[in-house]
Length: 114
Length: 113
Image (tube, helix red, strand yellow):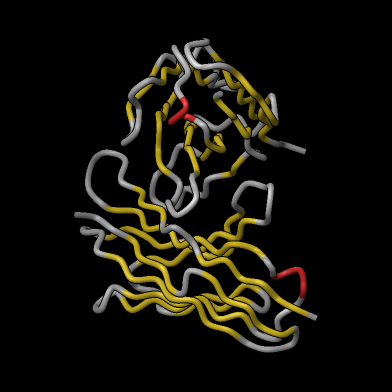
């Protein structure tokens, strides 16, 4: 069955370190997204991609970067982790057609920055 | 500003009872509205989607309504079960160009035996 996976599921790191969160989907979806989820807030979009070599900034992109070298993967990199980036991170993917694009979410990565 | 507001923030009900969750939005132009269910420690899963012309959509014991004129939606859960304990997230997609999908903060539902 097609799925979307994230790794690691839990990560503890120190301030200033570079961290990469992996996202892999086997739906063959063109669209992929990274969100963060914090208490009291809805999911907030960090970056998104509509296809290979395409990346776009979301509403909370500062301090994060992504690259899309193939259809299946969209890794999220925190260049220099900050305590404010402690959060739960969700990756999602959806089909090409934007009109009724159900997003399929991964299980999430809980990141703690000390 | 495009916003999605959900109420209540949290809700406790007894197993077998019905409940209704509310979603008000200001997203314009409007494309569609979804309700997602998010179990603890999991990613959200889509329950229903409604476009401008639809005002009711059911998925088992879940029934969503949409009033595009007043920009309000509700999710009604019938005969609640313990497994309904989760967060329910209202998500509105805007029309026009660019990526404009706004997530509500969710309603946390607790179903007690």
